[in-house]
Image (tube, rainbow, N blue to C red; front, side, top):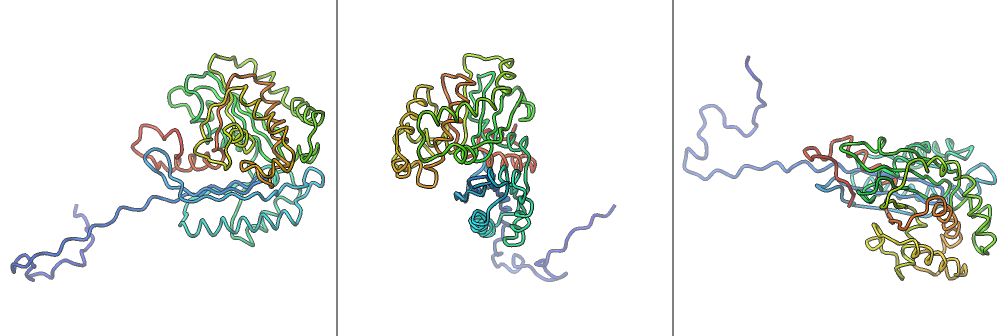
Length: 367
């Protein structure tokens, strides 16, 4: 059967002499540049923060080409009113417009844009997302708690001790906190297969601080917060005791709370992700850093380079959630992750697109 070949527009007419025929040097053929890697974006609109990552696949994970993070407090007051307030909506729309512009300027062609607890809990959450689409052109999806927990695990699991049979991974958010019992990877197990059990508690640093206070937190108020969290964590903790422990069992935390504690522990005058992401801390070091935070006044927290004025009234609520997790799952060590849900989104999209085609398995950790 005759095959069809596309015509070459630069081919000589039949019977014409070529440059080689008349002794002249032939011009070098133009090489076609390799196709540019797909540019991906992951956006996480939470109760407290609006975060964006833009990345391209690389041989050993992906390379971040742009990022954005802004505290918007979208869920401010939702625990009392059940609705997103107009000032919070206005702040969030402004941040999302920046995200849209960054995605456009970077040539993003594959993306996933998600909203979490604030939009799940607010009666006007769906209406807000319609307004986001009308005013910014971005179409966000509200994900359920299971999806949020799985994405956080996907983004952080590379930091788990590979020799540990079990790891408790947690993500302390603004309006919810996800806790996952993650088993050691065997063969080509998927993340879904590694997650033995999980829970999403409908409480986070914003909702807890609104309930108990965040500026001035005496010992009694702090312990009341810890007890409040432990009551809601108790059923999951009792079920998890059947999973068994091993010598290398540890906690793996992702959130502004744990990265702040790491920064305070390291004595950083300015937050440095390179020193925090992947840091191992002993249990005593965590306790000492939290004690230092609790001894600070509100103004001292606001002036701290790892906290700042926007989070000074939230960080002690985060410490209370962490303290409840530490009491429910005693461990000698914790690993700190400055990565999470957005990285999980990127890993999932790139894996589904076979961005690492030819590799034995997808890379374990993002860059």
